[in-house]
Length: 238
Image (cartoon, rainbow, N blue to C red; front, side, top):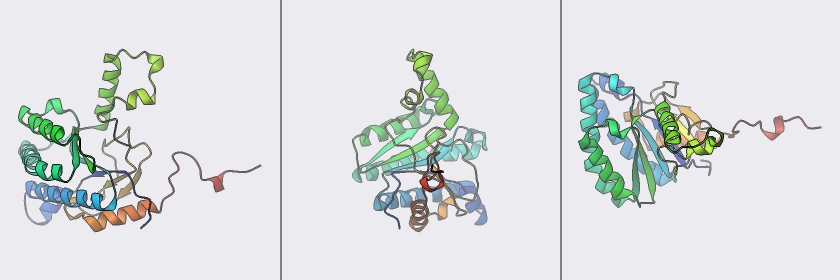
């Protein structure tokens, strides 16, 4: 594997429902399997030197799913946050939650606040849980902060907007992975992911493990990141 390791990986965790249906089980069974996959991948990130992992847990559009599934998901998020916080804290992982938290239940907000405050000073890694998150919503919220801060139009630039994202201290993702074969970004980290490398795998999220992550990092390490510029050997000389 190349020594070029991404500092920040974002993952669009897709395929929980399909994974469950293939086994004749309800969607909730797949979501619980997906939580187990998060733990495996987070440990693999730590082992491989990836400092920040952003996971797309629940989008602003996911409220349109069947009410029973949404309720089950929210219950699962709450249980997982409560159950895993001690281990995350022991491992030195900082937990942050990106999204419109004010639209979540008071009980959920309380659990999130506890997790974030307890782990705020941890430095071994960052787990960024994108919950009730949308890339467009984040940009809208940043624009609202600009207005609230009274920033004149002439002073609005990329830095002014970036500094008003949910967690501006996090580096932009170097690599975004999407599981289950879908080839779209689905409103995930639109601002931060402008120059992220993309990798799509047919593996369903509950089956995605350490070996899949190693393969993704090997693929990433073989790429030449251009950031909008052509490689030197493609530029005419003279």
